Length: 96
Length: 319
Image (cartoon, rainbow over all chains, first blue to last red; front, side, top):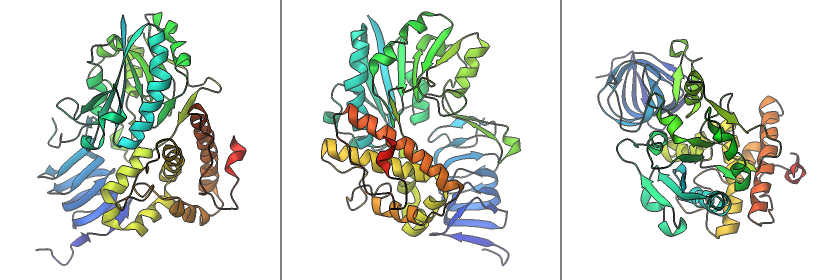
């Protein structure tokens, strides 16, 4: 259950070059070149940008860097691990 | 007989069809005349069933598989093909004179030369139009041709290296080099940018955020504006040559899978004078030259689509 300080991003919303902290839950927004730092990604699309921390539960990860955090599920279209290595389609975290 | 494989990953069958037409007409025959057994391989990065084989006669059509899970991994998979030479030509790059490329083969007799790059988009040559000796690249650390990030701790100022760029530096450490033919004046190449990325972006999230937000994003992103313009130029040529719709939208409308002429014209009309517009005008002039070269090579008397607002420089000046 989301608390009063929780920020919920919804389907139909679009963010470009924004930073989202641990209070954020994505429930369908599209994030382009954003910085995700500790929140819960339940659905939506992360295109480019940096996944610093948090949980990726569902949605699409496309072209960004997965620096740290927990990959629970979702579509890994492509991206990079924390060493900067390219990880192709389906090669989702955890990475060696 | 020496073998050459010309390889390219594609996401969209229409662009692949135009690409294949140019390669099969203008590149493959030149290498065949130079004594090569030539094969053309198209990697279908998405929806392979939309690539009708009759549109790519004699091409080998590949699809995603282990070790070639997507278009970037395909580059490394191609290095394992049974061929002494590989020629990567990007989906929106059109090499118009195969004899020009063949003229560089003698440079590759030098054992220290690993490849010839005919098109460079960054400071280091990538795979955009790269004729390489496969044995030289197979010796490099794997993945050989994948994109990478460096200096991630300095995000957002990390360094992104495109496919093939790291291989150039790895070759240098072994005392080998890539000949850069990019600087040659009047090179017979037509080069377009981002034409697949903008279509994939629309496909992935335009419906999610709505048309208005998608077009608003476009108006701020130079790369997307360039790509939208290039698709309009290519679409105009494609429809002249093949009589079919290019980059159709969900209702089958021309360019609806990218950005329509009317939509881009509205965006450009609202673009204020300034740095972005100056850069866009310069880029469009370059694209105009590219499409005119490509159309001439196809024997088409090209007419520019009515995409630029009236107060912009006319397109045919660039010819």
